[in-house]
Image (cartoon, rainbow, N blue to C red; front, side, top):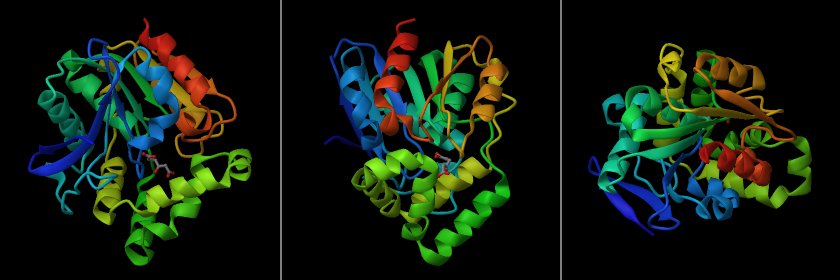
Length: 265
Ligand SMILES: O=C(O)CCC(=O)CC(=O)O
């Protein structure tokens, strides 16, 4: 179970797949740790050396104190964490796939560190995820009642009704994942999303880009994905049927197929 000290804080990561395969960096969504990608890993590691990690205050990674933008709680800071991880592992360039806030980190990397990004997949994300009032209300609720109180509402946005009815034990596991995230990590990353507007940098992304979205995603809906794909030169859009915000859990075969086809070039 590898751990690294980055900026004096422990970062939890895993690097899996053949040592000589091209590297694919996966960046998680808010309130998740890297097992969120487990169902797509067999397909991805058949072709790539896959690097997963936990954002500050998520999974087994240390939180940065709040408020502390300079040490990580901005999209630029979180992208800096990802670059520091690549540096520490001696990885010069990687394909990057980011989910939701992870997709914002991926957009930032592609726009500001283009030499480090090969191909890009932006999954259930947007240039802005808002409005700010929604984040302020969510953060106030968490500070008042704790993260377990928001977990049922989060599950209703992450997974379709059918999925929640079919596999309630899996949904319960993801609710536990959210509930056990540190308050600093969740609120810090929520502030980073609230304050991010990546509209200005999308046109500068040169990496070949695939934008993917679940057709029933209420958090970053298909219209936001369409706008993102339209803003990035040459980007393609794929809409996954019967999926909400976390298609790597809900429709892993479809997502893996799209990823492998895009990353093969
Ligand atoms: O998932 C993210 O990284 C940000 C968007 C979000 O919070 C999804 C949700 O729980 O509604």
